Image (cartoon, rainbow, N blue to C red; front, side, top):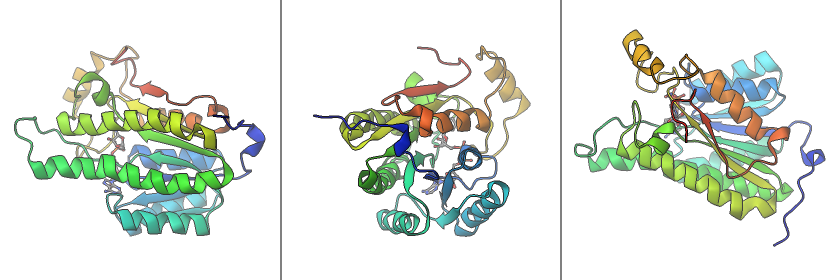
Length: 262
Ligand code: NAD
């Protein structure tokens, strides 16, 4: 199999990136949208709520002067994803990046988790990522250029985490496997695929800010001596997506402050 060379000159002057789950106010996705836009990327924001996604898109455009598009999409709905990616293709510059960031957590112990909860976690975290990536890859193949980043979790690597139990950890571990397989399978189309595995980041995924007590417990396990920020994760994603990231594929970047070293 002849691998396509991947010269930096193939990168368009203004690439576009699609970021799922980018509407939440203090979330990793929104920070990533701003980070990429500050590096010149056009940005598509996908999240459940259309007005919230459109508002983030407007804000990113106003702050960074790049084309943006905000879309209300439930990524677990195949047809909604197909329609949304078609709009991105029609309305934004060449799609080069996809950040599979949308996700839901499941703190329920394995012996108590319902079938309904288990399926919903996999519908969003796993099947949603599949739908989005499949549609994005169709566009990437036109130009033999694409960058995929899955937002997994330290929970997938260490057997559960602060918030995640089996459904969450299992779904996030699936993303690590997908990225590695895509790296092998899609390399010949000029596509790289990687993951980030954040540790505890101070967002609202569990419905609010980290309590001081929770922070204190976390700090005891953190060699860097502080809880992670959304900018820490956005920076790693920006690197993997950008021009300088083209020789990394199948990699998992542990953005965890050293809480899990392996
Ligand atoms: P968040 O809750 O702020 O953001 C998640 C976003 O995903 C929300 O805006 C939500 O509306 C969106 N979303 C949920 N279901 C969706 C669906 N079906 N379709 C479209 N959008 C949907 O949380 P966050 O902490 O910013 O999480 C972002 C990602 O990072 C998640 O995948 C999460 O699992 C992962 N992560 C977070 C941490 C952490 O400590 N915060 C650690 C490791 C991994």
